[in-house]
Image 1 (cartoon, rainbow over the protein chains, first blue to last red):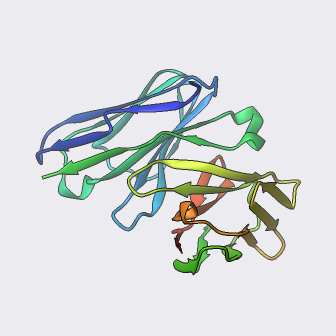
Image 2 (cartoon, rainbow over the protein chains, first blue to last red; image 1 turned 90 degrees about the vertical axis):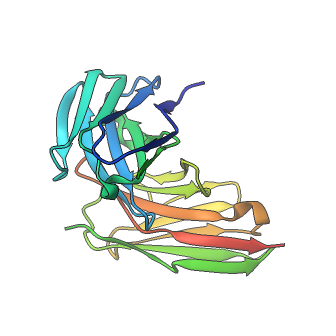
Length: 114
Length: 110
């Protein structure tokens, strides 16, 4: 199936831990994103990468570090997790040269920090 | 700064009704407008994409329109069904990122 897939789907961890979320897309898109959905269900962009290059960094704390080993993968590493990091994190992709084709989202990773 | 507002925040209707969800944005310099559906605990499913040069798109019982000059988009759902119950999100594509509204939570009662 062509899709954006993220792992894990659920992540429960203690404050202070470091964790990673992985994302892969097989749509051939050249741009990938991380969005955060907060407890009020509001979605906001965190990062975008185009062909492994960071394009957008929306004033996200330094504890969040995205890494794109190739244009099909975008991982999110979070250091020193805090209670306020609890949210649903969505990966998405698009084709920059074909912006008219819109965005495709993964199914989300629900992070709970306890 | 682009802001996207969706009205109403929640809507409950009996099955079979036609309904309209509204989305407004403050900056007309958006490229595309995309409507998504989100079921509880699930991801985002793209419903309709209105490209910058278009004014509306249709898919089955769904029709979305875009008026950049007035900063508005509407999603029309015909003959609503209980399976349409979900949160509907509109998002404007600006500067290579999507700016989302806070969604309309729709409940269609049998």
